Image 1 (cartoon, rainbow, N blue to C red):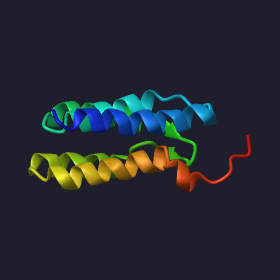
Image 2 (image 1 turned 90 degrees about the vertical axis):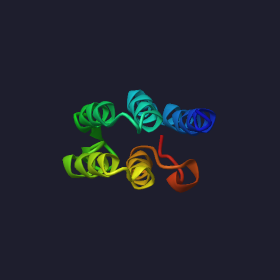
Image 3 (image 1 turned 90 degrees about the horizontal axis):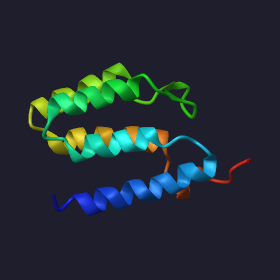
Image 4 (image 1 turned 30 degrees about the vertical axis):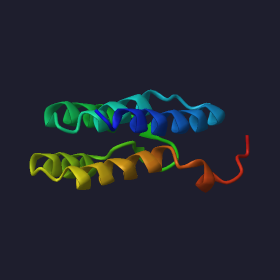
Length: 107
């Protein structure tokens, strides 16, 4: 539970960046739910499945591809929470890069 405020703050700052790019932030809500529930492997798997159905225009791929989903779930099942969280963070960074790495926006 002590991670909740930091998780909320992390996703709130990412949400502000997406708003400026006029992109939907439903995926960020799903990422936050997944990160908040890493102990519930089945729930995280379902969330990642839903994210796999969504398209990331920055990478021209699904937001979470099948290989990454499997890797995250396998790590969670093996009790490797930190490794799974790292992979999840990489997915978030591809979807919503931190503001200092975005550079100037053309719109």
